[in-house]
Image 1: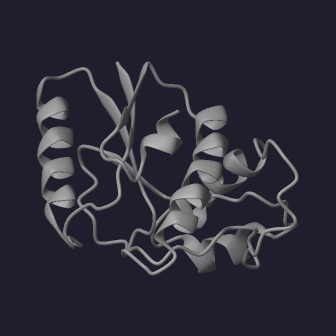
Image 2: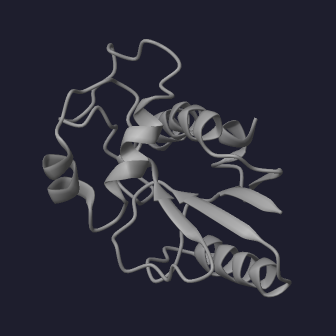
Length: 153
């Protein structure tokens, strides 16, 4: 079974109870066996435990096409995501988001916290979720909390 899970926190970066619950749920599902889990958070730091879940950060999901070479992508985000996944995601941009503020890779910068513009970050998270859902095969989607419900939809 392939699970696509949307969450706002994941250890060791915990701001409240969401990260602890996400970790327990994800690891418990993995321990049941025959589970391929992709867990999506706004901003990974590269030190997340990855042996039981593939971690994707919305901060590395392109929503605007940028013509960037592999070495540059590897240098910019290789510590948190395989550059090959960046290119797979880039091939599944589904709308013209050029009006949005993105970085040099065509990605939205997320705080990885609960900023003053939280509602905007929730909306941006759901936009990036559309790219992920068009790229990754899954059998089930889990949205862990109210912050990620729009992404699950």
